[in-house]
Image (cartoon, rainbow, N blue to C red):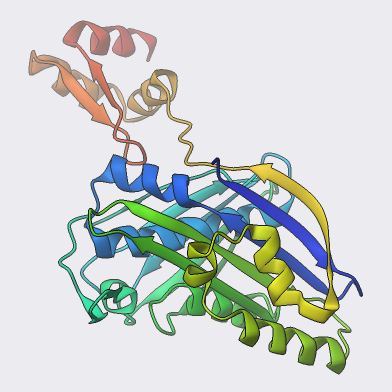
Length: 292
């Protein structure tokens, strides 16, 4: 089953909602980066949140970058989403030791840490990107995304994320939801939404039961009801290419390229997002120098 994202509104028009199934996306990221269980859980939550946040921007050709640095053993997480919700990313330390809150429950907060920030960079196709940064609350990522929206963008938000890593290190399920109150929401809407969130509970059990993103939003919105506005397939997608790497090499300048060429051996360039390696021979580098 392919990953997909659904976006909608409550029937009264005061709540914006989005939910996602991200199992394959997180599996692909874990495979590419060789993450251990704790790193997979933390990275997967961040990718899931980034996908929803990128899609909610609804700016053609825009993008959203989320950086999380909490001082924990994972070092840092970077995720980039396009305007659809396709994501790519990397972690500084993929081989995180196993840390559990209790047997069978990975401790994502301890993996990420709380001594740091969550930073969101929104490229809205304007002159300058919007940058917002707030202190981490718990390192659990869902709480931190919620705090980011409340503090940096003044939008009352609830974000819940779940990644279940199986005993063989594979990703069993992954997904989440993000709901936001719009200006003027009456007390009865707020109360109904709070009850719905409490009734729905954690994301992982819902995903384990086979609930779809639509089912999850139905649980969360409860008596408010929900109208679905968009359904799109999403995945782990890197936009690297040899042409882009070539342009990046040219940008470092003639002097440094000449040093690389004079070493007389192949020069590999590895994409940090997908681990694809682009190899340039001394002859290739010489051609780049000619272009400069």
